[in-house]
Image (cartoon, rainbow, N blue to C red; front, side, top):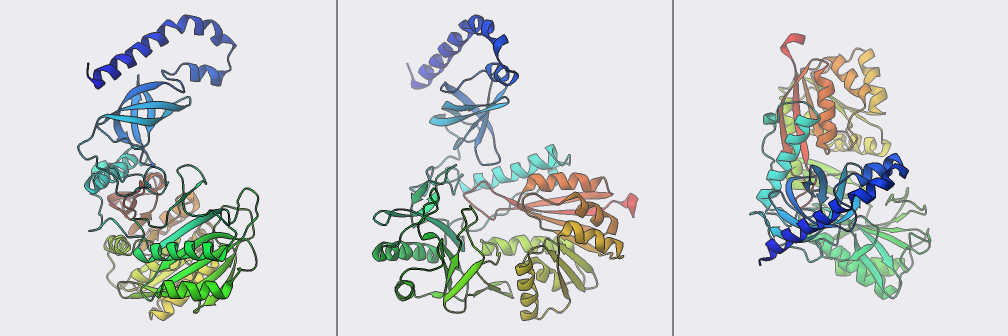
Length: 495
């Protein structure tokens, strides 16, 4: 008897056993709460070993299957696979399972490239070919555009990926834990804050891996006490590496106001990683999941590095936001510029402008650009970046877009193009209604969360805008994340 038939028969036997027990269960069900009744009515329970056919992919890269029309999520399973799983969680409308065996494998399943894959929580899709990843991400955007945005999924183009999907991240943030004798640096395990030790991540640029390994060795040699997030005691919390075109930045985050053996850190780090341009000691004394604290002490260099996007030069400080994938950032911003379709005479509003990266791309081809951002240090950087790159046709405002956009609307501002690049939560409705009231010819929506973008697109269609096209861009290969750029134009009936 084949393994597959054995598993199938075992599954059937378990199902029959479950059915024979229904009479006894029905006698007790009236005593249960509404929530308990809902759980007892589902076809699986925690601890069951079952076969699941996978038909789709979830928002976090997990496989999605069904048992008797009941949804089961299975991490590391792929569409078109049959998998054997142990049920680990059961809720009213879904269950999750731990993958035990791939009974029938998808054609695009491959061996992961990283020895920590499946333990470290950084990547979710190393077990599928990169072409398969792009297909899944394209479908992910199509699904939310249709299901949430109520738009034609054929408007979504095939996701754009890089030539090389490895070694792309220019920023690394690794937690520190353990003890003085057994210090650990690496990445959080899936779904927890347990540290998986590792200083050689295949999606990080080589410079960041050099920084990680050097800091691990130095911390061990100097006997630095790692931070314990459970007790709030200890010194070194995180090591952050940033790779720029001018050189490397290293940020050592401590829970204490001081960095022990500061001079030795500088000497040893610059000797082992000669490309280090600046070293910053950041102080974060709060018991929080936020990585950086408010205070920086520059130990070496001037506390900044420089990087470029095409011909634009940006100065980066420890708190500066900058896209982590330089190659795909150019693809993303070029697509936004194509959709903006600027001819040189237009005015543009860039809501959620951050440090002004997209704003300056737009300023190259627009008459005037207004950028809005609630984070004041980001606006300071944006103004400095505009000055450094010679763009005096920009104006940057420190404000909540949900407050500032209605003000601009009431003041009579009527831009030709509005660009949105919000956080994962998407745009507040005040922003959308004010934008629609300004009646721009085009709205360009840059999103790191296609689901909230789809929601906002649906809202904008009720204010006279029509979705023309959506271009997914893979900024984070090997992960479940995908960004997208959408173009909306005023429908002919409203013009």
